[in-house]
Length: 334
Image 1 (spheres, rainbow, N blue to C red):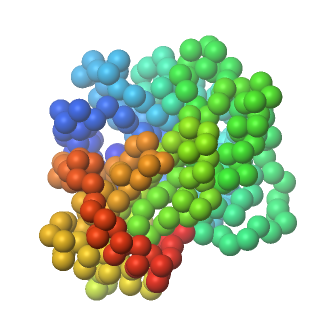
Image 2: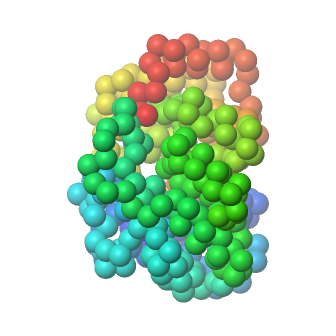
């Protein structure tokens, strides 16, 4: 998601080549990328990926996931650029017309004729996602109905432009509506839920993991390191030059409780002789409801750490220590 800004084109291609060499074939993008979101940059990551796949001639071996921007109008999500006025001249949302326009644009930038997975980036309505407690009366009219979004994505599947569909940053109510719509024949079933999940943010377990188990809708877990927080590199007020939170501050992972919990998890990792990043990745990778982890690597070693974690399930004693910290400091970055 940072390919094209924090991560240069050359660095991005090194990362992509390294991932492919290690057997990774799932690539995630979105029409607003790269992050941090800025006017004039939307779509740059798509073009970078499209050019890379074209030069490597490897599109057929890539599972390509893309996200179309909803219209969240939520400062907690997008900060000062919440209106997304710079994406398709502000014509964002999850209506039939906007989804079709977004997909056609992404197919062009990615230099492909289909997307393997398509997901709305956020709900096109007011929600209590992104650390907001409770649910208040909507302060604005909701966007397009979920059934319209589902039907449109289903049309794209029938046309061969999309192979499967999912949701992202979605709530339990939203997931249930997508599944209900599919049962009514409005469109295909969703296959995935791409939400944040890590040691500091485990709301998925109480809100959505039952859907994963009962409905077979797996979690694509993003932010497994909490934007790098769980590596410990931001502790003691450190601000690494290339750090994501240095360049793009986000209060979600920098609050006092998140810092306190991070220090405790780093202590657990040290006592068990494993790196903090491996601990964080392993915790996520081995949860039964997780289908895949979205790794936001900025150097090849980050990919190596994620793969090492996938092959290193955590012992029961270590997991019990994690649960004790979680019980004391639950979800400091929901």
